Length: 154
Image 1 (cartoon, rainbow, N blue to C red):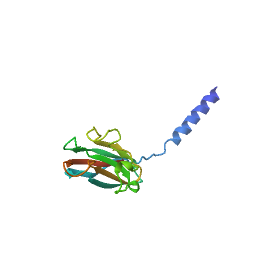
Image 2 (image 1 turned 180 degrees about the vertical axis):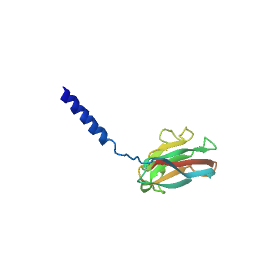
Image 3 (image 1 turned 60 degrees about the vertical axis):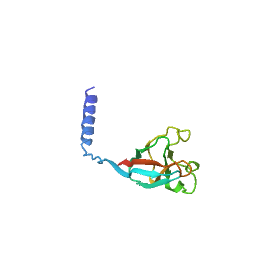
Image 4 (image 1 turned 60 degrees about the horizontal axis):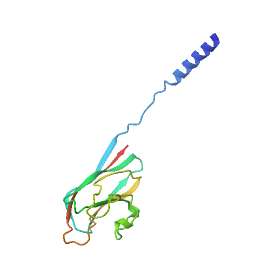
């Protein structure tokens, strides 16, 4: 029994000495890049505002975060998030392979739509597209304000 105690103590001393190696931790900080910030931009029916953004490959937990506001809630403005390679400016937005849309849970014009975004893109080139889905220009004008940022840890 005495030998067992000596062996356990010797093992404990050996292991505790091995744990004296200095350890370093990478300094990780949250970064926020505001890439969309505009106020009271008039959009007629069918208008689109497009904003490109690159998500670097060397970041952790990237996200697009923010909100937008329309002056007249009966004339909504939709927002779509696309991989840049998937976006075609000549096709209707709803017919394209979008990553996220504010219309996902809505039922058409005049219905409640999300006006906030918090999605997690992968590294690469992305587009944020704001669109006035109304048809024509007469009586379809709406004003939109937005603040959207890219947040990540690095």
